[in-house]
Length: 279
Image (cartoon, rainbow, N blue to C red; front, side, top):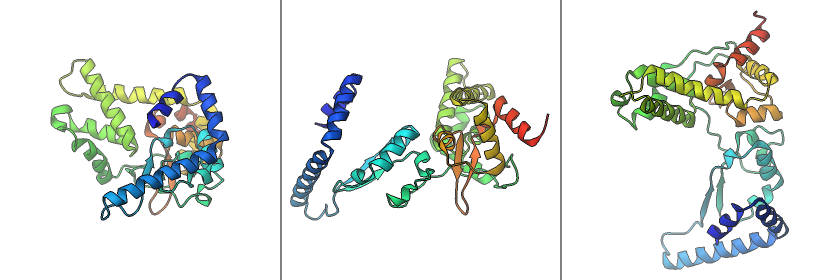
């Protein structure tokens, strides 16, 4: 049933519209039917395995952190009651932009568990360019070392540390730029990843950020984040968090910082110089 429904949803845009409208009209009935299905399944599990299953189903809805901010706000604020009415325990992944909404998602759901970046910096709110914490940087680099033989893959371990610095402590970004550097080395028929392969991979990721940044006013905001270590909770701020131009760190305190690859761009450097009054 689920496979058939997903197949239909992935069909034409007209089919999506019809399915969406039908679900909207019958949402209450759909919830009731799903709950009946869950209850029946759980009752049968308990009868078959009386000593193993006592707490019901756990459903994890992954990848919702990748939906656009406007869709995330609509889903988690307008449909909060419906998302919680299924008779099972559900874990939703949520876009970071939703967490930063002035509507306060904690009023509708229990306190969210926010996964921050790995803080690779020595935090100093008054400094724009933060120094790296070597121990934490090594910790991020170890995520790659635990997966590959670094000496066999990289020409020099410094290239791995450069990738760790460029990740900003964002694990997915670390994996992306590392994979890109490896592919670049293979394309260039290098026996190992060289410094030039890492540079090329980081530049390509930087260009992606530049293409997704709408205009100069966004770089002005990014420069202010670099200086103030905080992001406005408005629509622009939510968009910058969503596309990872701005990252969150927390622990003893919560703060924001600009993605290292964004900081490399010429437009950002110009915006920062303008705010600081430098020619």
